[in-house]
Image 1 (tube, helix red, strand yellow):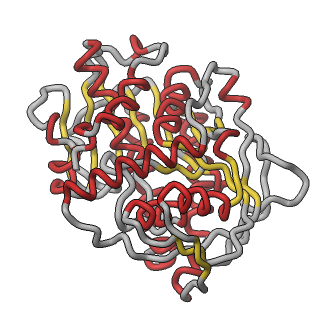
Image 2: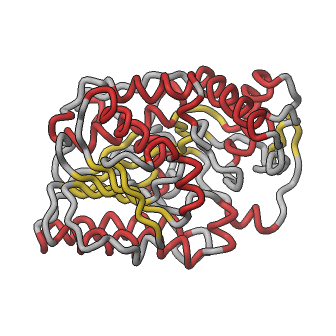
Length: 364
């Protein structure tokens, strides 16, 4: 669905597009974005195309994704725009038409627990093989490659810190199914360093907190995503654990403003945490907040085997974002405001789609 038709969403896109960043670095340049129809990728596309339309940026956006059908629904206003091109195909081998791009952004990734458990090979391939494809392209010549990493590279908190800074490394058991996502993200960061040192590729790595927003996909099995879908449809929120985990969450406009700050201001080879102190909370508190905002109840249930195998073991995964703040980045939304805005757009989009199927799953 074209989310730009919703005033609340469009307001958020325009706010990011109007930030005082070094946009001239993208003026007249080309940018390839993998995972373009996902939550973060699609918002980034909307920001760049909005900047093109209202500010004459002239950035040619090449949006890669597996599904032309999703692209038509999501990017309908841009399909006839000469500054927008959709490149269909698997991220590991899509047809790049032999072109060279000034900027490459690898945002394609499996990002929810049920997929980690049911398609671990695909999870690893989209991260590692997809990134290798882009790194080889970057080695032929580009201004910068950006790899979107994750809080999950930190593993489990060893109990010796309140918040992860970029130099922290916690415990991660690689001999488990659930390691497919975390370990592949770690490997990708190492690959970025290898290509930077051996093939002189300019890389920068934003590490994102658990991100949410109106562009969430219905099959997203992350806990917060399903809380939001249930709340938007007026169903009780189902929590499948005690919910005592403390996480850094992040609203997608803040995630994309952080990503753009990394792209345009980040130092070569550096990783930056993208997280908001105002959105760090206990999972059950986030669930209760959504229940209160939606006028429904919070209930507890046990997860099934597939759900449980995909859950993160981290009990405290809070990120320290002072390094990115030093680049003059500042998140704009509190947790409550972000949840409220997400629910409002989800309700409106569900009404327009005339369907609430897919809003009935319980999660941890």
